[in-house]
Length: 152
Length: 207
Image (cartoon, rainbow over all chains, first blue to last red; front, side, top):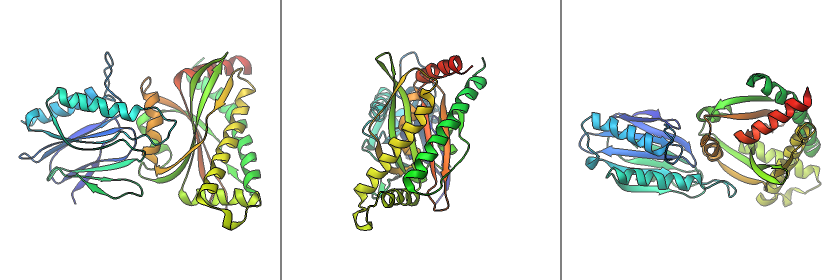
């Protein structure tokens, strides 16, 4: 197992092996995992809020994904070579708002705008998730409380 | 008046609120419960989980939505949470049920959960009644819900609604403890607009 780096809400990071990028205890937030196979480079953005016109903030899907993609571009990776996996967007209480759902929608829109394919997703539901992106091979382990650990 | 002084007014009230809440809780569980001096602070949204532990901590949480009724106009006020380790949740509900004369065999998961929800109602009510003394608004409590999950996952949804408008959230926090391992955090997150209404009225009526 490589070295874990936890990405907090509203942050992102691009890294290479042996680093494992993690987002621990996400609920309605969305972890966007990007990966380039040949360059063994992965990036993770911990999105808090959907994109909103006129609102420029690192909490939001558009700004975070743009920064993540720019960082990867600086390492010589074009959008066509990136594969995306997205996780989170749960709603743990019935009386909570649909912020999780709106986050997932917004993340999908921002990725599609940039021609980035989503090859795996585990979103929605009423349980939190922890996510580990291994930059060695792009595989993502997702664990939930009282549920099976899944690999994507 | 500076923001810190405004918060001081609310701190003062919250001492009374927490005192009420601890009395109510001690009666419910039939044991002496110690209540830490409550604190009210503005906390950066991404740092809130760290105030209560680590985002991965497994916790049982009772959540109650709060609304403020301003002359018939309802506004979101925030969220009240009681966060406990699983063991503490079991001990708390068990003590409550014993206090109510419930036999061991009747303590099913469902009954334990309704005991915790009831605890949420009583604590919220006793805490809010301290504020109502000085604030001329009605508070409306939602129906309590329970979730058992990671601390980070539990609170991020409520915080994101506030993050739409602000980078910091006003957090009311106090800790309950007792010899019998029934430690719990009692928390209220305030929505920005309701926070301003409450603070303004407090200042006006207290001084």
